[in-house]
Length: 411
Ligand SMILES: Cc1cc2nc3c(=O)[nH]c(=O)nc-3n(C[C@H](O)[C@H](O)[C@H](O)COP(=O)(O)O)c2cc1C
Image (cartoon, rainbow, N blue to C red; front, top):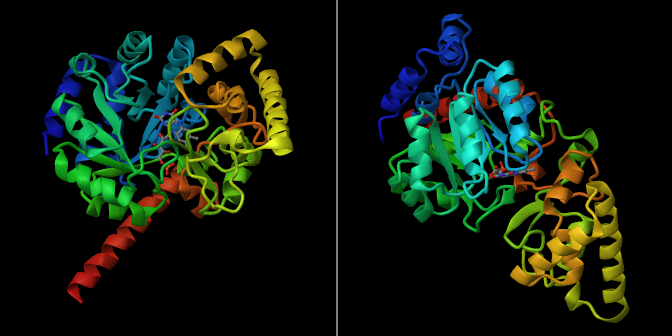
């Protein structure tokens, strides 16, 4: 392992003169001194981030804003603000709002390839945000700039070679997400990806994709990870801002309730399987094949094709109403997407509006019109605890699980 303590010391020094930085850093120690006893699992991740529990709330566009991130950090995990769906002004406000709601470390997740990535990083540094996490591999110069400013850097990876690359560039930790995860995913399952990545790099590996409880945390540690990150599980908390009707749709999903589709934005994206997603995919009745291989309404013929296209156009019109996009702008976006992918016009009408579709569900509460990124784990979740209750339950169960395993060894 690298020297997370050394990294933490640099961070302390950097922030030593700031009242706010000192307050945030000292909060975990103050809590420890308060005598409240709670399950403790120390890992290189808790040391690196100076958090109480090795549990990260994964970034979720339109979902993980100040409320969810602060609630997670206050509960002893690491909350991440998802900034890809925010304007610069919204990000600036989100940082100060989160800092106002928690003394504990939190982070901002951003796209390394965003045209305004430099400005976003400027806001992270100026806002003294302890952690920057990247949806894709950030360039070495970007990592260096953040580290020079005392910000801990984390990158999401879906394959060993990506983890090795960013570790070589000096990243502090990676989130490795297996194929059962929500949102954009790779094909390798978590149970195979984590041991492979953990064996390949010498920095803390945060396991993601399918986690929801204390047994999963212990399993991740056994695979060599230093903690877990969860998206879907945190979306399904009382602290998540998503509308109750939409949460109910997630809670109702079974283990087969998600599908990986390329028909949304051209890359594999795990979402809740809804009528609209089936239309996008071009449901192959009788074949049972749905995972990212459908050819869209193009495979239908005659009246069924016509009616699918009418449905698509009707949906697109509804999305336009939600988004406020003009028709010319929608057509411009659609043309660009059709040029870069093999989508049919029917699919393009919807796919060009991916952010709008996500927003329709996550912000406007329209499960009927929107798109709902989701991990397979939605099929195992049936409650809406607060972040505090969730993390406490995970840690208590992890302790019991470790005791059980110790007893097995003695027997
Ligand atoms: C509703 C939702 C929205 C997401 N949005 C983003 C995002 O904006 N950026 C990102 O890097 N990952 C995003 N993800 C992926 C998560 O960060 C994380 O990798 C994933 O949720 C882990 O799998 P799990 O859902 O099984 O816990 C999203 C996931 C969900 C469920």
